[in-house]
Image (cartoon, rainbow, N blue to C red):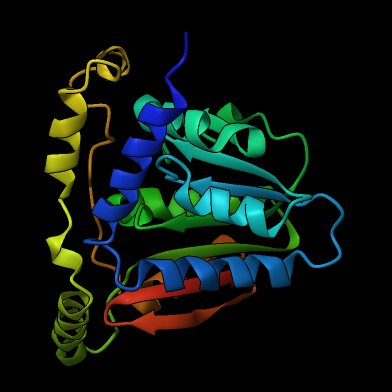
Length: 251
């Protein structure tokens, strides 16, 4: 017997709240990303869209709602988050367990045609620069000409004197939005571990299923350079608040 929809709804809702601590204007950023994907897939009969580091599928579900004809894949390393999303959002999404950047990770997705759009939010900053360079190149190889990569993440402005200011502006905005009143990452996971219905899935994760966080300190121009090198033709930010950017790269 799978997870109950009631349990899934409860934990996905807690996930949504918890994530607001970590993304400035998360909902607006999701909306901007969906706007970009809708614009870039206009007129495509059945767009193929990947959400990389999807968690339970918060952004993927919004994209499926916006693009009913699209096939949306929610890709994440964590079986618990994928199972929560599958039980909550149902067949609107296809869920795939894969660790972004591991050798052969894209082959695990079972793609049967070129990708129209790949999106990611607050996930790719976990990758080191060497891994990220390869991931950008691999994605460029799977996207159709005119396809798009959209990354909403913590990306610092180029000027060192502005970076600290950008972080502070983001923090002040988050405080005004009461973002820090939400539970944090550790609290969510310890709560999940105490729920008997989630225990079997947590044991499947092993001790630490989250990929090792190499991290990178690339600024905006650093990302732009890697994306151009990977084969993307047009690259730039379409939205920014504090150090949160939505970066768009067109194949």
